[in-house]
Structures are given as C-alpha cells and as structure tokens.
Length: 128
Image (cartoon, rainbow, N blue to C red):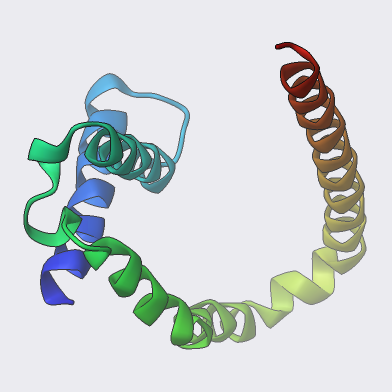
C-alpha cells in the first residue's frame, strides 16, 4: 500500500515538475494523473511493466484507500474558507454566480461528452 501511494505521489510530483519546468497553464496534479493513467494503460498492454506497485492491482488498492478517507482531505480547505469569511461576505454573490455558471457549463460539457462517446460506441458496434 505504501509503494502504491508513493507511486501516486511520485506521478503528482512529476506532473508538478513538468508543469513548472515548461510554465504550462495546467495544474501539476492533472498532468501527474495523466502520467499515472499512461502508466496503467502501458502496464495492461506490456506485461514486463507489471512490477512493484503496478503489479496485481496495487495502485488500485492504494487509490481505494485514499478514496475511503477522502473526506479528511477537505478539512484544510474548510479551514481556509473559515479563515477568509470576510472575503466571502464581501464577494459572496459573485462567487455564488460563478459557481452556478460553472456547474451549468460542467453539466453541459458532461452531457456533450456522453453523447459523443455514445455515438462513437454505436458506430463501433455497427461496424463489422
């Protein structure tokens, strides 16, 4: 489990280094997550990569352990919000409007993605 968590954190670190090194406008953990996905896909395709935490569902078990305690990771964010209540009171309406608009945009993007993937999968099934 420790090796799996270490691999997840190393991917995040590699993403941070990559983003800061190339001054990309993308969060480092997102690039790290993409790196981890590439590693997992490569592990499934090439058997010789199934070593250490990549072997036998080790990363998946580590991720499940993190997800089981995900609520603890929100405590620092909650403390940060409480520390900035004055800003929240001053800009609360604008923040609420931005959140509402971003939720609608996210829902629309999700629906569009599902529709596109559904059509692609239907084409794939129809093609012999």
